Image (cartoon, rainbow over all chains, first blue to last red; front, side):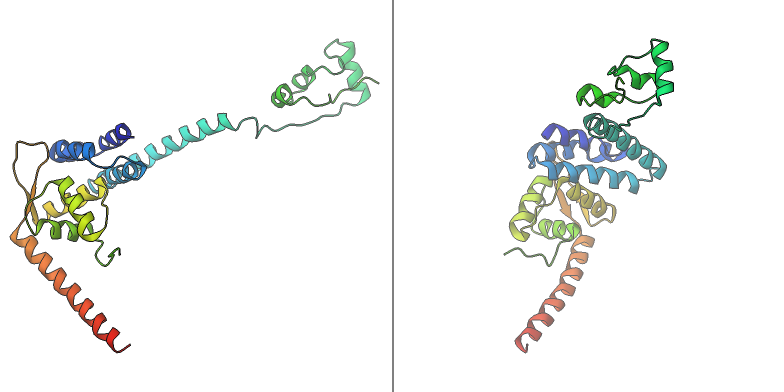
Length: 134
Length: 100
């Protein structure tokens, strides 16, 4: 945690760090190192940057980028839970056309790809095939 | 019992420096002792930056990485004004509590 707090201390504006950086780093080495301290130092750096006239668009852009990265990371963790699934029904005539073309076989999960459905969840959650032999 | 009547970091720092120069960590410890408030490092140095900008404290040159600060005459005057105002509020509240 102390390392993260030290990194947050680097977020202060360059001019401020030239004046206070050395003593501030010395303080961070002595002060309690917990998540509250991390948030306090991060908030202090952001406040100081805004007070020093950093363009708001830069701050908004940086926060937006951080949010996008966090969302991307989260999306990989919950991908399976949020996978949309669909079951299509083919009329017999259309199914017969596919069979004649030897494109699909009953129970073949590849049928989903053939007709443009997403099959992601089928690999982890087997379900009855939407195509059945008649 | 926690005393939250004064929570302004700038006033707490001025009060801490009123009895002599201190560096950041010493201020942090002192404020926790007399006000029971733990200032974060970001809050402390944000307030130090503003206080120095207003001329209420000055940095004392030191070979140590930890730089001590000293309250100025202007700082003492500001602290006295603020404490006088606070004293009026406290006295009024105590007087009224006697009749409550």
